[in-house]
Image (tube, rainbow, N blue to C red; front, side):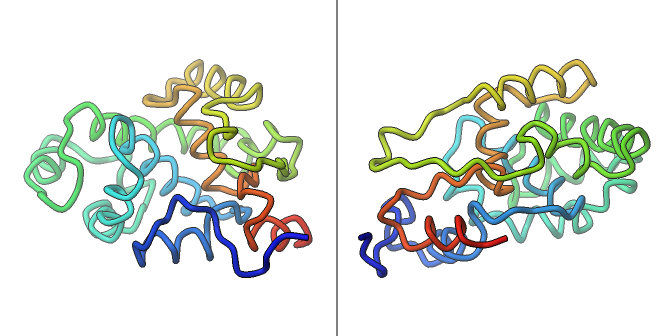
Length: 193
């Protein structure tokens, strides 16, 4: 029987990381704006720690007009210059360009499927995959599902969507439950409908 007060060790003693772990990580997301936010944040995490990204999250929300996909898809040179000058976010020209391009492709997917949610959850059959890891070392960086998602997103013109980024996205969006089995959130999420 798992201890009810135990938590995955990765948040350490960081308050933002603990709140994210306890309230968001592994919780199924079906809101398109929130799915786009995680897509942007996970792409920006490439080469960096999640802690770094999480501590810039509010700045990203402000800088990207609260993830207004239609507005971001229309960003031009002036917006790119504004974002490159914003010390509160990750000022990487390729990642900024990818955010704008991904907004355009996101709108294409919405047009085709009705919602991005309808499209993206097909990679797990519309359900959360509940894993049973005992240690952080067991957590994979990719999966069959993230490989398929990455391949399809790339085919559609999305950028910064390698399989590792897609797997991190799946964890954030609750498409996989990778809480360790002795973490109190593992069972809570498994029981949730």
